[in-house]
Image (cartoon, rainbow, N blue to C red):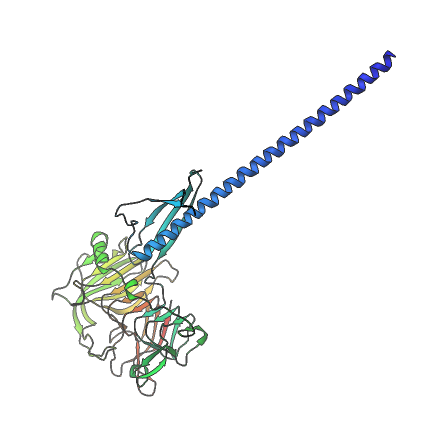
Length: 441
């Protein structure tokens, strides 16, 4: 009997051990599940906080985009003080749940693009931050392949690469590879565009592809406010005087300056001593500047093979000729103050070419008045530059019987007034200027 009792005790003990093992396993599994749930909750919470911080950072970008829309030149958040600038972020119940911190980086000279850095964080976990960098701003010098504040005519030998926009009407007989835009539904086409002061569609002509033409009423196109794409020439002057090259008026000692770029990354500046007198008519039918062809020049002391300034700025308070091979980045501006009295022009003396068209070299030409091509320009001309005539036109005067071959521009062409590199006379043939035009953006 004792033996039987011993066996039952052994069996009970074995069952107890198995039960304990089972309970232990269940406890471990339960603890593991609880740990997993807690971990998943923490991950989900952290993910939610990161997403919330990202939304707050996005709100910062949206806020400063709104701010620039109301004050396009304010890069200090309306404070007049250096940043960073911190704003509370409120929920739908008007309760603060976080904040965004803004760093505003003003645009460089020649650009209107502002860089905004926004960092968002929540009140509950301020250590969880998300940062967004955005580039916002107005339309800039290089927003268009071609831009004019006037009517424009592209002939059948004038082709465009890049967006074309005219605030006036467009006669387009060439070939485009990008959008051709005007806000005009119709316009009055005059004799300068081969019409008899008659009403024509906003865009018309024998050009192609017409699918790229956009104008009302089929497409609503906004006019470009030229005030938003002009450059502050007085600021360029200030910055050039500080860290670039700045030269004053000749005051009768010369006709202006000639800036010649060299392939080794340097430039030379000449004083133009004598000019050829050439008589032509501008796009308004008025006598043009007869003193834009260089006859004799002399190196300007101290400016022989000098490096392009670090900030790239060259400001000249007189008529300015430009030519050469550009190795680097530069902006040449010609202006005098007060504006509107004796506004200065830039003349393309000869070919202007980048060392390579690979994005590493750039040239901006900003004329207070006109950008001109002279009477004795090369028969085949290449201009690698973004050109802007702030108050005048990018043009070549009408010189009777002076017909040239081809012109190729690589970069934006922006003309407040009427643009032309060539003139068409009766019968449709080119009778002055360049026969073939290629505008590449």
